[in-house]
Length: 401
Image 1 (tube, rainbow, N blue to C red):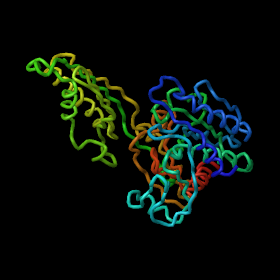
Image 2: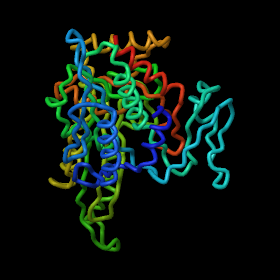
Image 3: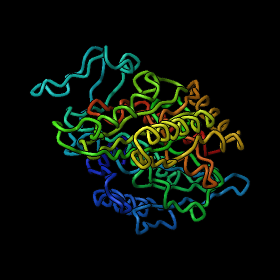
Image 4: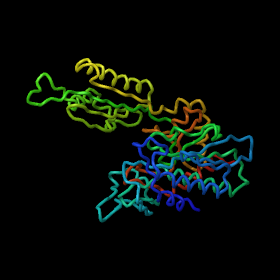
């Protein structure tokens, strides 16, 4: 099966994960792709193929040169649920510039002035949506590239390589992709997630991440007799938010700059709730951000009374650079592979996270490689066919001798 056909087969399956679920996988939808991959891996000839009870899929290609390392390749099967995940109606266009009308009936247009990536993707073949759903290139492009690479390896036994370990995970989009990953059973010396954007990018620095939930307890009383009695939890929540740095938000930051992001809010006089994510590449600044929230909560509890503000902080993942820098040869190998493909590698900090961040702290150093996708997590997502093909070529240079 060719790469494009494989990719379109995968994106036809709705695999959106569900953050509100406490199961793994978080949605039944993810099982269809997991079972499909299990069967496809067996048909290709991978060994020890297994689909576990949580929809993780594993398999490997035995090495034929004991001097070469065992290298893992990992991608996630789920897609984000921020926009509809089905029915997906992809089409391929040869892009020569200008705006792309995704859906004339609904007036949905991807405008070149809004998406600077389009200016770089002229004269390339783009797989786009009809503007009503995401595409699923994040991360089915990575899944398709790994499977296409495996098919090539198994068809060319003359190529020398170490053990090639393959793993596909559920629930990466809700931060749980590595929760139940079998690192010991996977059997790799190090690995790469195929979960990035432009194919020439190598990502080994990501945010340190935490979630914060602020529950505000007020006192509701009739507004006509509220003087010196009412404590309006909704307004108190606004006071908490107003004490955070006004410019340390996603809309005002880029590169290595961290932020507080108010993701959800609800409330009334009696009780209110604010839900945040906290991000920073620098571990010290990350800890300072959490400490600031604790200080604000303590100050407002002193002002309104003990227990008025409950703050629940939970670390999600940490910057993988801390672990990856212990094996610099893993990054050098990726840079060399890209150069061998005629590309100029770029080290780009991730303003987010990947399974690789968690896995790196679980003992499996795992930087992230580009797949050729663009504009993830929205209706303007698209994939560049030529970059997807280049990603497969890069894997050949990365692993085969």
